[in-house]
Length: 125
Image (cartoon, rainbow, N blue to C red; front, side, top):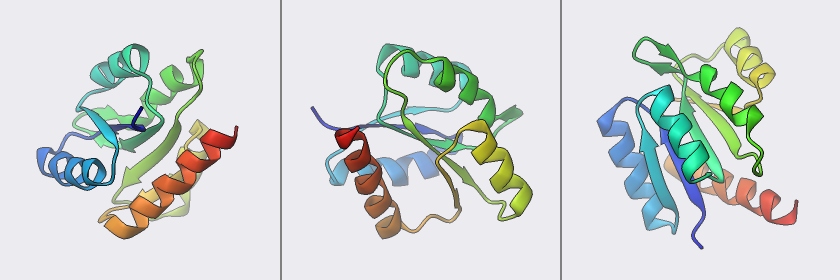
């Protein structure tokens, strides 16, 4: 089965670009533009990796972490996506359980390499 990536993002342009990149490299991609939609995907079709935008309209993307942390299935690798490159944002994300923080704009080749590494770690676990 193809590795499953959940994109939690409210920009259709970002979703389209990331979907194209990830599907070209052999991933199955789901997307959600709200916390409620992302929670439904987490329970119905658990992803291997979640790329989580921190600002979803008026919602805080990190509020999804309570659903991720409560999941009885193998927890996905959660990576925060943000335009904020500051220590407070990094601390907030890692404290919530995110593996790392990627600052937008995201470098496609770097993202592909990182996802391959995260998926490799999950295969060993």
